[in-house]
Image (cartoon, rainbow, N blue to C red; front, side, top):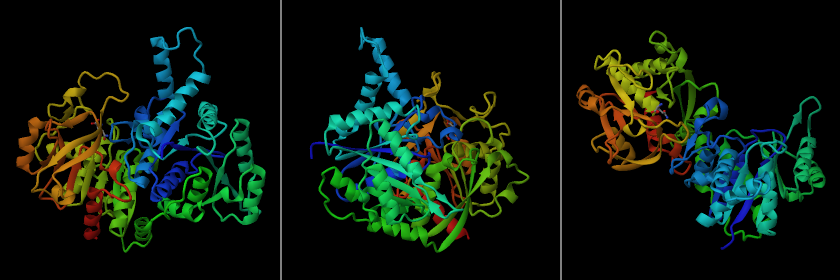
Amino acid sequence: MSTTKYIFVTGGVTSSLGKGIISASLAKLLQSRGYSVTIQKLDPYINVDPGTLNPYEHGECYVTEDGAETDLDLGHYERFINLPTTQANNVTTGRIYQTVINKERKGDYLGKTVQVIPHITDEIKRNIKLLGKKFNYDVVITEIGGTVGDIESLPYIESVRQLKWELGPTNSLFIHLTLVPYLAASGELKTKPTQHSVKVLLENGIQPDVLVLRTEHPLNLDLRKKVALFCNVEIEAVIQSIDVSTIYEVPLLMKEEKLDLIVLRKLNLPENEEPKLIEWKQFVDKLKNPKKEINVGLVGKYIELPDSYKSIMESFIHAGSVNQCKVNIKSLHSEIIDDNNVAEMLKNVQGIIVAPGFGNRGIEGKISAVKYARENNLPFLGICLGMQCAVVEFARNVLGYADANSTEMSRTTTNPVIDLMEEQKGVTEKGGTMRLGAYPCDLKTDTKVFGIYKQEHIIERHRHRYEFNNSYLNEFEKAGLKAVGLNPDTNLVEIVEIPEHRWFIGVQFHPEYKSTVVHPHPLFVDFVREMCSCK
Ligand code: GLN
């Protein structure tokens, strides 16, 4: 097929309705019908990428293979369609303006006034079309962040309005996601907010082709008819998205609602074969019918907002399904853990994960938690900063270097067991300058991690500035903490483990970014298996 088809997904009434999950579910269905699909997110904020945002502001920052720091929805896309995304899959207003302003300075628009229309909108359209052009996808689904009516998202809405006409009939489609609230007092579902939200879209020149209505209760035919009538859509194009216990059920529900079929018909694409979702269903079945249950402690400092650790949470869901085990994540605030209360705080968990992070806040609590896990043979997985904490803890309490630290936390420590990477020493700008994205790692074969990965060469994603200080490596190894995975080019320590311990692994990379429904990450799968056997 030569022409790429474009699907634009907007949201109305309120944020957090699950545009990302609907987009990912539709992509999954189209993919299972044999189409090549990708999903893109347009974010309306001025940051060039979310890398400089605090997780409280925006949830987790997701990192792609090519080292882009992106919106967490890209994590959902990858987990659903099991294909890597790239920088081109996430565009922010900041990035758009940066490009346009750089062009203006170079003189690309000499003599012209640079304006939102056409210069900003042209740059937005170029970014939307880029994916289809570059990778020749059959379908590109573009999710527009925010809610229609927001000042910030107007240039995006205007751009896709223009694109519809440029692409020609049946080459693009608009899906609008809204909420149908339930009024308990009168026992009624209300469609008025949907009607208003479609009106806002119409004011901006966009007639949605498909409406996806998020609801707590099933929508009856009359209600669907009413929405169809008031919003100028076909009744078949009024799709119900009912609340479910797991997001992984959504593709199955969208299939029942025939979202894929209506989309293909409107885009004039053949239906091809019925989606084969056998594996997917097995995954959901196992997830919903666990035979065991464990508690894992997640030690972090952003626990008030569960989205801060989205990919870790989802990785545990994948690993839980494989093990047919319900994994309860017990969030533990690292700021309130200390050596005195740690035993009490960890008394009901079968293992702990110490989360990634930046800066000093909560660091001593993380170190106390590591110490407890190490001394009590409690399964431990440390990710990025979590691994660095494990190294610091070992240096202080086993090697006897009381002031050991990471130079991120103490510049004056006499034992910088974690230190700034050489390549970072001249870096002054904060945006996009970490060691980011996929790097290779070679595993030593007589190790636990090799038994888990069952391969010698792995590639994992990164997001850090500090690393294990190799001048201490011999001392660590002699005392029982081994470097078992190294970057083959630089010898950067990527994985440490304590062979004496039942399950103690720290990784400098982020395994959570690579766990998908089809390929649950082996480290999480084995960690959950071990915790199940503890019980
Ligand atoms: N702050 C640490 C570093 O920059 C760890 C980063 C992380 O956990 N992602 O190396």
